Image 1: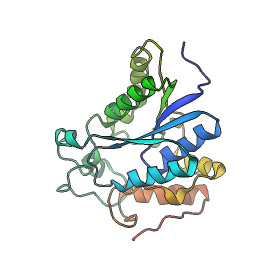
Image 2: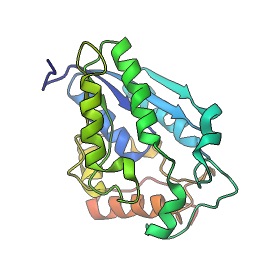
Image 3: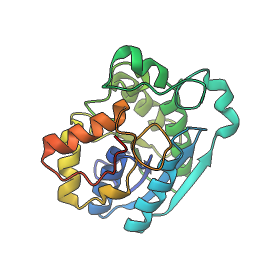
Length: 224
């Protein structure tokens, strides 16, 4: 039987705002938490270093799954193919299409599920939220519901897919993170892999807007 009050979880941790707040939430709930990062050949691999720093802050074990060998199967997209530029400006359907990595969440959740089963954890947690854009098919609630159903029969001991932020905006997530004392300065959102957040790509713009709307000081060093 799947517990409604789980005591152990594997969290998918990108090193960004949302997943870092989720990690903090699980830690605050006194769970046993394991954090999983995935290197799928993304140009913004700095997020892996960010995730490692966040885990060190919380004393949470962190492991990275190396999927770089399969990145050639993802086709042309701005996250894994450096010949495809990252669009500047706020999110729009045209600009966002270049950042779609086919079935990325399916792959990531599957790896997290394997680790969760091996470690006898009760849930896999990921930070999909209400502001995730419809252009990403594997961010839809319909996808999450069906994947949750699959995880429940993936092992003799049922596993559950948690997405506690599904009804929240990024602004609300930042506000929650502030209450939890999340070290926002350690996190990384930018799709470009520079020394600073570029300040021009959609994720940077959305990040800055969330801090502004939440009334939380933004520690991010933006290049522009």
